[in-house]
Amino acid sequence: MNNLVNSHTSALILRVSLAVVLLAHSLYLKLVVFTLAGTAQYFGSIGLPDTLAYIVFFIEAVAGVALILGFKTRFFAALVIPILLGATWAHSSNGWLFTNAGGGWEYPLLLSIMALVQIGLGDGKYAISHFLSSRRQIAKS
Image 1 (cartoon, rainbow, N blue to C red):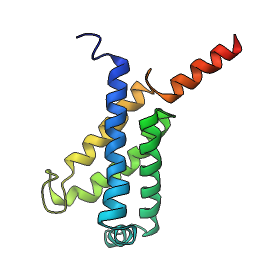
Image 2: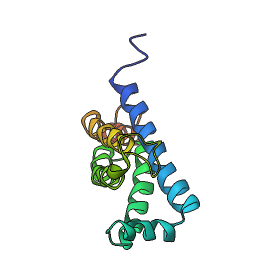
Image 3: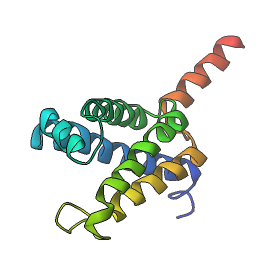
Image 4: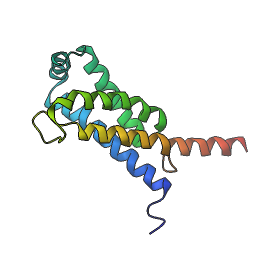
């Protein structure tokens, strides 16, 4: 059992979980359900620049792919924290529970904490960055 949950598998599980949520929120929720134009309109309705919606969409999608692969994990985990804290702020008036109308703030806050922990864990052994680093070391030998 000790081998099942270690720092390498923990980093992998957290990294992929966070990535899947980011991809679901960008590619599915923002692109398909609300559309990018609708998301931009929502951003405008809460006092944010409409164009910020497109930037958020792009960062969430790219970070999601990078995190699944384990590429520059610390960088992309750090990059999404302001977005996730922004989502926490955007949902703060809806109450604690994300099942509330308009969604609450506990879910984006949890994702912010997950991203922060991911920064501490880094890529982990099961990441493309680890694989590429190992190949570079072999090539130097």
